[in-house]
Length: 148
Ligand code: 4NP
Image (cartoon, rainbow, N blue to C red):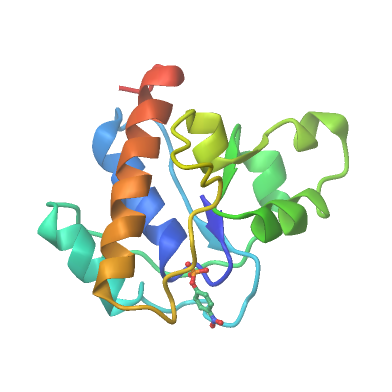
């Protein structure tokens, strides 16, 4: 799961997907900037997740590197800029084929919204909206790839 800072959207996506699937599958998240590396998720993400019974407080921000493109089978990006940044690090067609825009790949586009909006400068209602989008997307991904 990839976003910009790895403190708001992708930590939520990581925690939500993990809560829905078998423990035998590995889920991780990272950001395309290293600025927040090592930090806890944003308090607002931790709060909204907790309200829905998902604990993301133990997660720490990582920086997305080429190694993730080798190590993971599927890479889900929150927005088009994240997608572009991840694809710029891919060095083969095989790697490029692993990279998706999460809402598109989950097949849960609503009102033509193909990006998970960055809630960093927003308020709790933006985090609630992001949570609902990611909950729907992760449910669809868990079903689509038979991860339960
Ligand atoms: P995220 O949100 O990409 O969902 O983790 C952001 C976090 C930090 C910043 C921007 C977006 N930032 O500019 O530091």
